[in-house]
Image (cartoon, rainbow, N blue to C red):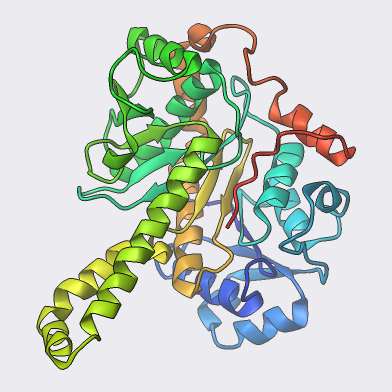
Length: 373
């Protein structure tokens, strides 16, 4: 089976070339049929490949020494798309030279470039940023949107549910993932008009490859009771940061407690297997790799601070989505439910993301909804 290549923005992320190349090399051990296009400064990439011969034999280098900085505005990054490592990696997907691209660079710039270069799939108004989060159950939970669209109408939320369910089927292996909308309560009368409308339409729809069961509150996201949580990017990004902050709080609290006295240190040695399991479960590197679902191509965002293991997981996400043909799955699901499920027109959300990205490139004010690191 011939699989499309994966383009790696080797200059993206806080650590740059060394970590990006090492992460891709680790991922290739799990996906040895894949080949890579490494985009960035050629001498530095070659030096990094010297310690990864398995990666060197499966890689081509596209030289580029311009980088999108972490604080660069998306409008400026768009104008430099043809000369930066991020832009060239995305362009490789656009031209068909690669099937997917992964970058640890500026999220807003990646989102804007992806929208303009790849465009949204037929039947999708707005792409959504989806990520995986740990749960008490056997599988991670898919959550979207995590910051790409701050203001969403019912039609957007329904499309997010379809895309999230398609992604969850790949991640969990379930034929009909459990899907819920994030809300301030589970009662049908709770939430905004858009949430209630989306819930009603999803409940009434037939032919959906999902189990839709209304609303879920934020404190239940990680309980393992749901496979997909759907929300707008504003609420989703806040929930994500709150969960990540709580995880860091717990680990820091345990570290302080176990070092507070000699008895505590002895207690740590006794309970070390359990605490190591907890640390592994809460480590964001083990769940790294946000996906821009709804684009004509696979685009994955790695945390800028990710280590080699984290980058490896982001590349693993790319490989899984290509192996399971996520774009075809979403297209098939949209065709199954029919174009009318989300209703006609747009209410409340205003412009499509392509229109917003174009406005941003022209320097006009807009609601970007950028997800931060």
